[in-house]
Length: 176
Image 1 (cartoon, rainbow, N blue to C red):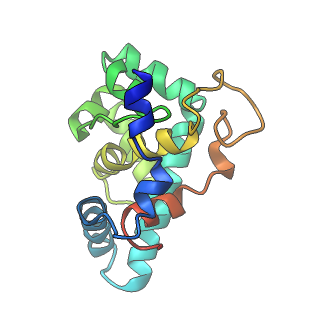
Image 2: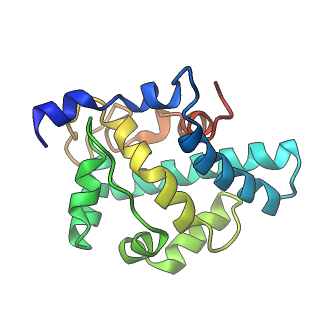
């Protein structure tokens, strides 16, 4: 990615905390969270559960892959390296579809993760398609990927200290 392209892209926090409330981003992510919340009961507690479940899903996927480096490796092995590499640091995040997520992670693993985090079966690929690019972006803010398995930082293999639920809330317009 060219330095000029990198310099022109706001960080994920700038995007998520835009004072004008990036309605397109909040609308897409808020819609997915609303859909999940509706499937989980439709009340305020269900929306919180959807946000928490999606955040837990991201943490599990990134940790089990070995951090952002592991995510990049998995996507490269599936022929989707260009998309994943665009999520690192600054620059435009290329989109990924739920179908492409299912090429990277086996459907039975996706369903097991969904169940583990209280999400409806079949929803993990949709959640990951919407939020994984932003999660990788947020865990690699300087545009560098720590070595796979690097301990001790939110951007290393232990993404457990990174608050993915809050990231999802900001993207969905729930946490301003």
